[in-house]
Length: 230
Image (cartoon, rainbow, N blue to C red; front, side):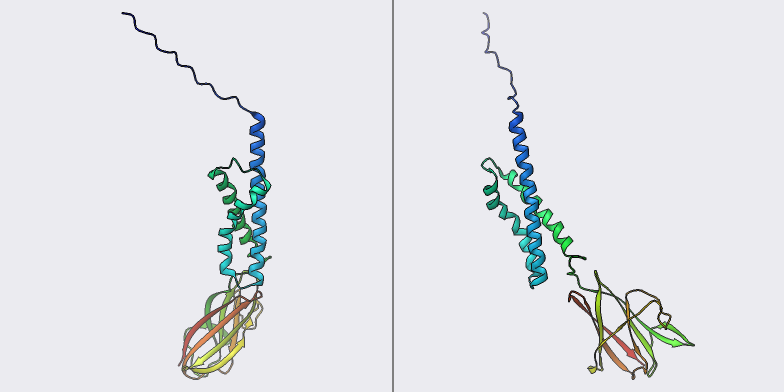
């Protein structure tokens, strides 16, 4: 008995490629991405002025995370987004966030701005021996010594002040320290250093020194250091 012939399966045919439609879609996608970057630049400028003119520094990062969602409302006003799927929204929003983050970091550093606090480095004490100023860890009562602290900043340190308590009581009010120049008379080397010269030394006691460094943008840092004079 002869077998019935099955229906002949039709071969798969690729849809005709519409070059013009593809070109228009790619052009629209490119314009959307460019607008997302421009939008990020606008948000970064707003963030910059929020940091410069208000005390909302901590809120700016939240603002940066939320800002890309504004594209959901703005893009349909400028482009046809009727065919947008979730992935189509993700691209410009993610690009906008990355562009905002990069621009915000750029605007937060010199020469545009400085939002970082000064950073303290080493503390050093020098005493004079045989006409030379040498590093020491021990200070004798009444012995002249130089207290040095190093401070760095992204832009420029405006001032460094020193104050002290003696045996738990107020002893020395906030007093400006002097920047240690390369040609200083003490022949002490080092960069970004500030000093205070206790020419008459101190009495034997425990002291708590407080250093406050402030940069030209008003950012400041505090360091406390204890020493004992024997």
